[in-house]
Amino acid sequence: MTAASLELSLGPVSFYWTRERYFAFYEQACHWPLTSVTLGETVCSRRRDMKLADWLEIGHQLAAAGKQVILGSQTLIESNADLRDLTRLCDNGDFLVEANDMSAVHRLSEAGLPFVGGPALNLYNVPTLEILKRAGMFRFVAPVELPGADLARLLSDAREAGLALDCEVLAYGHLPLAWSSRCFTARHHQHPKDRCQFVCQDYPEGLSLTTQDDSRRLFTLNGIQTLSGACQDLRHELAEMATMGVSAARLSPRSEGMDEVVADFDLARQGRYPAPSPLALVDAELCNGYWHGQAGMDLAPVLED
Image (cartoon, rainbow, N blue to C red; front, side, top):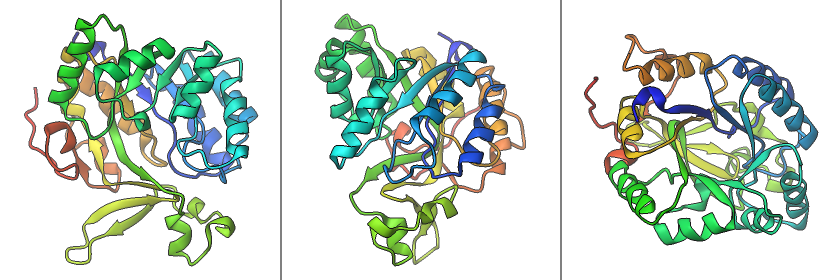
């Protein structure tokens, strides 16, 4: 494979936007050079501006534009209500589902439905891939901490074991690192979680957490989720991904400048890296450390093709 054959996919929106912003964003996405789009609220069950019917409506618009549509499940299941919502999602009858926890895997497997294994499943070895392949998984998103060299070995070993699985890599965006039963954004505003006043919506790009010594952006707080402070940027590694057998490069949505980001990655598939980069429009440091076996927040030097 060459970088030009690598698909571009759009991951779910991590942050909490208004209903109007979601619809406007995905209306634009209909025109972007994407093969697949993953939709849905995958972070917090209290974010209820968007109902399943809304996601299905957006999904049908994207499908009409030629995109494969996948619905992402919630990562942290905390209540019976969450399980009921998960059941409705898995039984939607229109689109595939990305399973972000094992309860979703169990539900989809019981129903005999194929699914995508999300990044939160942390799939690091062939035996785990074999188990989930038997359960119905046909594609998986590599863990964000997995170095590129280790992923290459994993994909090679999977092929030797006779596993036919597509693999997706998060190539752009804040890296999802952890989920908690506590809401850090609400706590920042001195609100209890169950009366959070939905302050996450005030931060469409997340709430920056900086270091005390040099004010470096260390993490991005997103309600119950903690993401990296810097945005992963693997434009220069697309050819390497394609060579090792990665099927798609996933781009994580941002509220501003996303059309330029998609265009930049589309050019990178062709070995073209415009200067100045449109990624400079995004107010965030860049990183690629995990891919290169370094600290995740590092930006390893790369050579342009």
